[in-house]
Structures are given as C-alpha cells and as structure tokens.
Length: 229
Image (cartoon, rainbow, N blue to C red; front, side):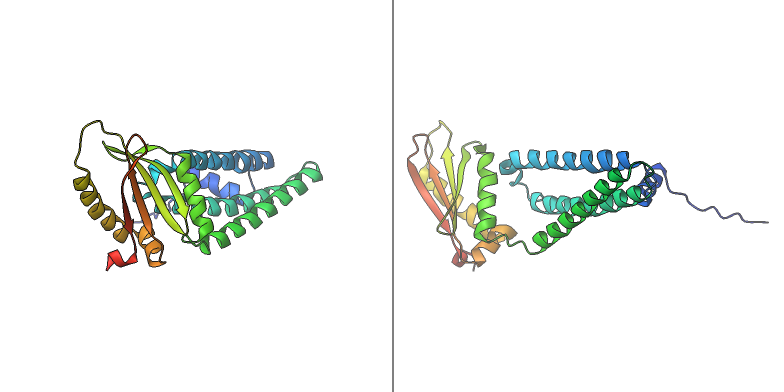
C-alpha cells in the first residue's frame, strides 16, 4: 500500500506575502498601496491613540500594547523597504521611477533603524519622556475617573508628576473619609504599577490634588519612594 505524503501549501495570504517580499508585485502597488497607504493607516491609528491617550492609559495592557504596535510598525517598515527595493529592481518601465522607489526604500530602512535605536534607548523617566507623556494625556482631558471624580490636568513640576482632580458629585461627602480612602488606593497603585514605581524609584514624587467645582483645593496626596517600603 503506497502512502502519499501531502505537503501543506501556503494559503492565499501567504502567497501574497511571499510575492510581495520577492518583488513579484508591480512596483506601483508595492509602493503606493503597501507602502504609502499602509503607513497612512498606521499614522491614523497613532492619531486616534494620541487623541484618546488619557482614557487608554488607564488600562493596564495599554503600555505593552503600544510597545507591541511600535515593534510591529518597525518590522513592517523593514519588510516593505525590502519589497519596494526588489520590485524596483524588476521594474521594466522608466528608470527614474525605479531609482526614486529605491531611494524611498533606503529612507524607510534608515528611519526604521533609527526608530529601533530610539525605542531601545528610550528612558521613560527622563524629563523629555515625561513632558511628552504629560502633553499626550492633557490633550485628552478632562476624563472621568469614577462617579465622583474626573482628571482635569497633569503636570510636571520640579521633576514631580502632578495630577489635578475635580470632585464632580453634587452629593455631600465626608472629605476626610475620601482623603483617607484615596490615600490608601493611590499608594497601592503607585507602588505596584510598573511605570509609577519606576518613577518613584528615581526619587520622583506623584502628587494628587483634589479640588471642588469652584477650583478650591480640598486636599493633596503625595506619594514618594518611602511609601513603598
């Protein structure tokens, strides 16, 4: 009895991927569709993320998801640069279009390499990184934290991160109880959250300021490295 061994073949998406990488896809499709349009789509995603940065940053998976997206974007940049180059080599039309496509591919390769260096050497606790974080968060504020509180502003003062909250509830409440309760919650979050703890370990403070609707300060909660021992 003869046994016939079947070899698995790549699906349509796999074949398209291979053809693209080998330069078998026409240059104009490779460059404009898979190069320009896809990168515009990436930029659109980043714009949406930036616009909703304040609310998205409340999710624990957001930092890792954003990092994964950044690495995927870099990997795709290398892939499409190779695809454009190989497609340009096989291009039978005017030489000028092939040369321009190759220049674009080289530029994409250089930018992707630079992005890797920036990503690897990125210090989340530096003033420059924190200023960017503050700007992105403030662009999406105010954002509601819970039924009684909304975050209205984030700042970087003397190297410390400040969060300004407004009490939006119309119901009377025990301010001392709220301060005691929020102190315990914020200290736990600050000491256990990876990003916040990294800032505390660099001797930065997290300062939470609560105000009423008239913008009068009700109380302030400071969290420092000593609170995490």
